[in-house]
Length: 97
Image (cartoon, rainbow, N blue to C red; front, side):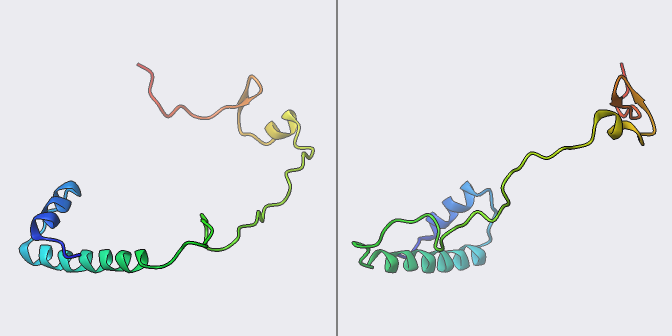
């Protein structure tokens, strides 16, 4: 399928691209080749091919989520430069009105 310069211009407009005449011609050739590949794929017999989302089987490679003891509230705040009300106190970065 060969794209016309008008179709390429329309695609460029939708993509918010400004293309010169040479760029439009190059894009028309490249996009036409891509569409040609899709037409070739459309000719394949996929009658007995099972649909798939991935080309390779996926496995979960993460470790199991196991609850473990963590720091106590006091231990977490122990080395904080400043704390107030059981929370880390940090310098203000937004000025109040």
